Image 1 (cartoon, rainbow over the protein chains, first blue to last red):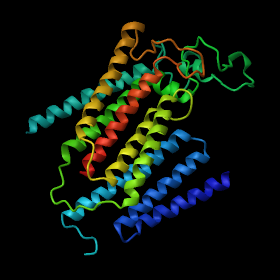
Image 2 (tube, chains in turn green, cyan; image 1 turned 120 degrees about the horizontal axis):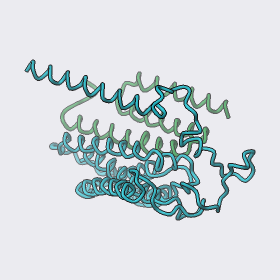
Image 3 (spheres, chains in turn green, cyan; image 1 turned 180 degrees about the vertical axis):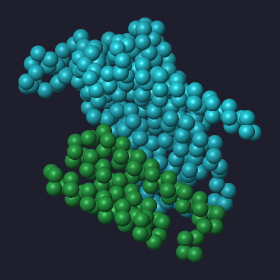
Image 4 (spheres, rainbow over the protein chains, first blue to last red; image 1 turned 180 degrees about the horizontal axis):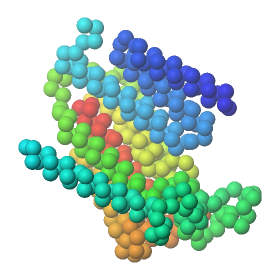
Length: 83
Length: 249
């Protein structure tokens, strides 16, 4: 159990480093959602099921969707990340 | 301009002194002075409460609580729920008020998209999303209504309902009207306030659990916890859905 928690924590650490050094915004947002999904898995391993549910629905659905809607609004107003 | 700033600073200092006095009074036991690290735990609610144990075999036989017994101060089998929704309900109420302030601020600041680029979702997404929404909402209702028996409760279930609505906002251009969310959220908050005031009227303290507690482990037990969690679920779901509706459209 402890080994799995450590492995998941290392995956979360690597994912958060990847989020910072990502070139494209959309890839960074998707990696961020995956990191919070892994953290929900870690909450399940630690037997905190209510925190896992809240993390899975808020961290990986609501935050990702809000970031994507923001990117869409930016693109509609002429923002282009390649420039 | 400068005089106003001075007045604001004086007012802030008075407010901070007042809050410090309130905190000092709350931390002292029976006016003997500050007993932050030497307070007797037997005088606090937590000692009476947190020894509740639902398992069949435990070492503390004298204080053990079994499923099916009745007559407790709070009949919730889930200790976390009993603390969040009964003993510390004032805290939860203010958290819900913060959520209301956040969603009201987003509604105030966000405007409608002007240059719309329409991109419809594919047929696979549009077929799958209603089924996933149905399952998610059923699971969310189970989590909300069993908040006093199993892990989870109003916050988790409300966030699940909100994520179901987010899936709908992603897949379809036509949306539910924002007016429903704006109507439901203050109504649920007023319901919470009415629960607190009726507790004050019937039992003498704000947010007192005035309904009969029933037997431990039954579906309808633990007094008003089910009502409060249903109201919190409606409020969280409508608040998060209104935030995401503002962002999406």
